[in-house]
Length: 209
Image 1 (tube, rainbow, N blue to C red):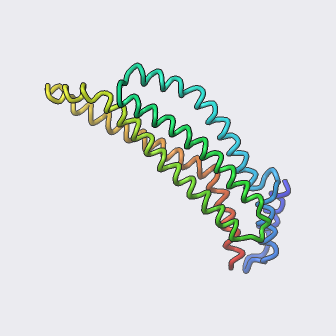
Image 2: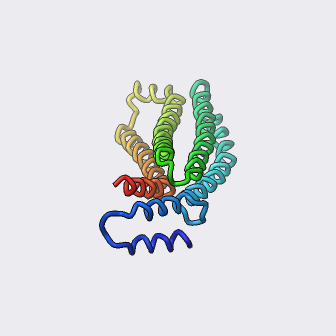
Image 3: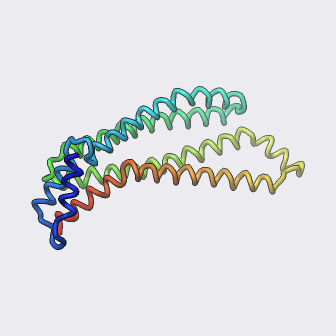
């Protein structure tokens, strides 16, 4: 790969002050429409995410709707349906916006550093907002389920039949699973996008030195 060969040449350069010309060429190579460039890698990852999300929506929305209608009633059912619908809308917009920002990076020619920095900032903010939305969605699902069962929960409390040990265990496992899902999601975003943004930012810092 041309980019790999360029990286090897770059690593073999003498240590010391970076040559601005070589650093600029390195940045251009990272933005180029080449199979191994960071921008191309991120764009391919976005395309894969689009296909995965499409399959998840098709396979799971119907199942979630059927289960919720079978076990939940009234306001809790409406709340869960609205949360799922909003999540689908957000994820669709998220993937579209992510792809748009990456294409903006590709439009850079390696000289418009402000444009590149702004695109990186927007990409990081988008990834962070996705984590916040995921937390809100998972919390809404848990609250909708709890609200749907609130009569049974209140009756059990009044009758003193609540197994507080089991209840505490369920709450702990639920919180643990939510935290684990968020952590895995963040690590996945770092592998698929964050590390390439780090490479671009490191190159921009070299040009500023």
